[in-house]
Amino acid sequence: MAQHSHPAQSFEVNFDGLVGPTHNYAGLSYGNTASQGSAQASSNPKQAALQGLQKMKTLSDLGLPQGVLAPQKRPDVHTLRRLGFSGNDAQVLEKTYRTDPILLAAVCSASSMWTANAATVSPSADTQDKRVHITPANLNNKFHRAIEHEVTGRILSRVFNDDNYFCHHAALPSQDAFGDEGAANHTRLCIDYHEPGLELFVYGRSAFNAHLPAPQRYPARQTLEASRAVARLHGLREHNTLFIAQNPHVIDQGVFHNDVIAVGNQNVLFFHESAFLNTPTVLAEIRAKLPKVEFHFIAVTEAEVPLADAISSYLFNTQIVTLAAGNMAIIAPLECANTPSVKAYLDRLISLNTPIQAVHYIDVKQSMRNGGGPACLRLRVALNQAELAATNQACLLNDALFTRLNTWVERHYRDRLIVSDLRDPDLLRESRSALDELSQILDLGYVYEFQR
Ligand code: SUG
Image (cartoon, rainbow, N blue to C red; front, side, top):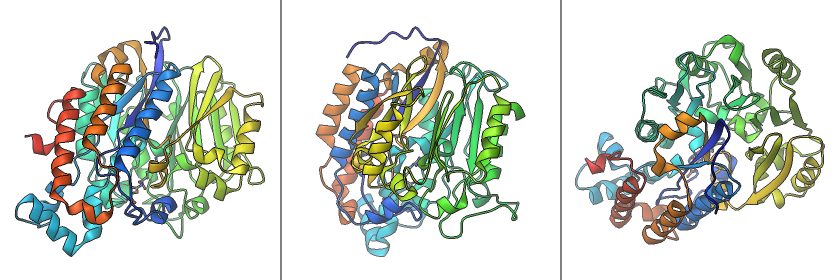
């Protein structure tokens, strides 16, 4: 790979989550149909991690700066002890398995790989103090994810470790009214990354306004109150924020985050016609707030791609990346190539008069089976040159790091896991020694409790 110089003034850096050594399928996410459908299947953590690395490499080879975020320590024995399990680590795991195998699976989930849920990030061009603001998501709708934010915050503060440029907030109060799922419900539109943009916060329900619509079947994980709080913390203003109601009916079909049905990049918003509660109003408000931008609103109709196909293929959980001014590509999961309506649509899309001119299909099947597509696996961080230089350079992918991480995965990861394996004390040992080594590779210092 060429070592790219970046003459541009600003970049969107994708920070992908490395898949952890305990990646498994436990059906933990009610409302996420892929997770529920894969419950009890055997997983392949090694393949999952290698697929994730290959995805990062594909983007890096396209000339895009690419970051890496470390996974969480799992099994999370610390949380099991807080819940009253005692003895040595092996006894804690065994007792949990016998008492409550679902709880054991929850504290073993590798769910931090989906870094779109790690945090919400506002670039410095949008914030009042001109720093990049970062709020880890409390993820309080699912227990296995609610135990992520503390370590996530610690890792992010080691990656963006300079108060002159970065401002880190604590996660919102871990209460249902402030359910926050991070960037999975947040998109930013702009002309160029370093110019002031419009941050779109999509919510599934309101905690305090009972008259606003809400889904009936599956939970709405993101509340309006949480989105507003994050915008306040980040010092955003009325003119650069828009709060948008998600269509509750699509949540009930399995669209558990807005990034399963819409994705934006610069002047492009790509979405299914059923994504929002009131699409004409949404588009008019976007135009009113960014009057100078020539938008491409690409609405996919039900006749072109039925919602069920969009959900199973993850057509909208794609990444839209800018390769050069006005030249964008879509990074899509292989499932899109294998779903006839979606493949036909994407073939047509690149011949239309929009900035999207190519589609790259990638294999992230291990993650897809838990409801995590390309867009779930990355946290977007728009940075200017000085901010990129102030970022922990050991976390930015180059050929050497790619090779080193592949070797690291090959050495430490298993190629098969089922839920009953999670109590194996050797898995805990393997996972700790893998993460201990990784925190050195990524120059993170001591971020995990077991290292203290
Ligand atoms: O939170 N799946 C994740 C998938 C997250 C996808 N992220 C975005 N769309 N941004 C979730 O539902 C499944 C784990 C299991 O069932 O074992 C899980 O947590």
